[in-house]
Length: 209
Image (cartoon, rainbow, N blue to C red; front, side):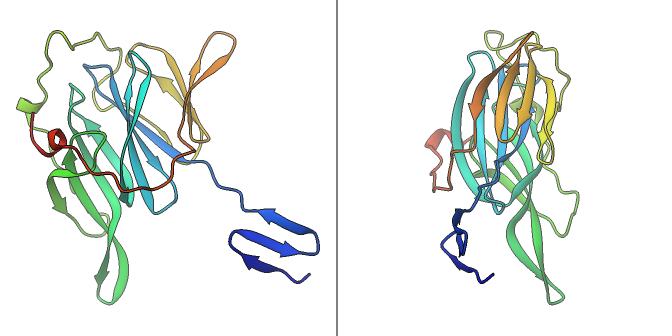
């Protein structure tokens, strides 16, 4: 059967079929002493977005985009800073072979704009520690979390189930965040309807608190 591709449609004897958009791939990183989580949303495959999640009010704040994907991240205990390893932020040519370069970034979520950055090579374990003086938790902001430090959920390849700081059961599936209740599940956030756009970090995200 003869087929011709044209702007996302396959045209042939059976008619035109719209291209199916795959669901976003999600990783969620939780602060250990504050009701803050950061969602690293990947999709389209070359781009990622940060989304801030207040787990006390279930308010979600879409943030900045970048080229590449977040391999690993860690939130400060107070949720005000995030240290990330980003693969594919820019191409690297080594011995004539084009590859993906890893960049370590310290920033203020939900923004990628770096307060500090370090460039690594192919799959190099590059990391920026979050200084202790940036981890301080104000008494009014502190919570009794059930989570250990560096806790995260990874649904980048398959659905993932876990808990948030309040002990609620959370399901990440097909680009969405669900709350699992006794006999049902409730949609908290659907991350599938976002497209890449340029977002400028505000002034407060460009400085240390």
